[in-house]
Length: 400
Image (cartoon, rainbow, N blue to C red; front, top):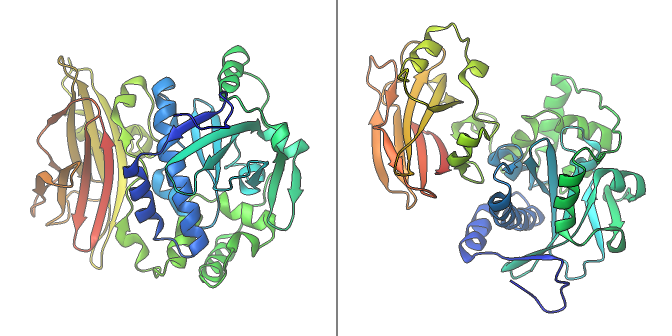
């Protein structure tokens, strides 16, 4: 896609109508009008740019899981994509005047959030196209950028940015060890009691910009805690602490299963040895399902089921195999972690891209595990897995 008056070196992409609509619907959960608009821009930006990147760089993946990064848009602009050991931070803006890049301090001075490269992305206010009009590095933003204490952003003039995104790929290939990050001062950890008190205080949606309501070092230290930001956002959206664990949010983007065969995994899906003692009966039961002659990819995810009567950790297991016709064979199993039985009436289901239930299975009184019938997916097939018990529902979307 090309636009008049846009240099040919700048990347311009059309935003599909389906992404526009889906992004708008999901953004309406935010606690403030500004949060809704920020989420809308970021979802369109990430959902359009990530697939484009993956066509050339298959290992490109969203940083954090989708639910965690999506919740952050209620209070902080920006998202990130990982490529091997490096991180690209996307900063979208609807302004028609691309004269400066403004990056929230969280993406610069919080060690867990800091990136290597920062992309300035203009999103058309109508939502039908975006363009990447420049990029820079963490080092340049930190050392040459102007820090605006009023809104806690680092700013660079457009003339200081490289406007040709192809130059970034050339630099990464010719000089992969190029220093991209400036030194960041470590942040002092916040005690649990203090973090809980701050969570309750900032959970009041009447505080319009919680990121500016605390000293920057204290706010950054809280963001170093992986669980803190999603909890804050749920409180601001009106959920009580008792309600928060009831529903596990689906990831913002589907888990790309074809990448698993290239050893590229979403960080929420791990080897079983990372979650379970390899000598335990549970680890043995999961491993024994694999025939000695088969070459399979197996990944697991821990899901905590919490209802009024149940609080139990489960292990969702996906085992993939490559079929001779190019399809991917998928086996889905669900095991209890803490006990020897699954909760009665717990349901595991597989849904199609149109949210139609294709197959499901329900746990009975003596079930030690349940599984779906093995199925095969053609390339780029989308499906969803659900775990449902009473008011609890976990959902995750996949693409083969």
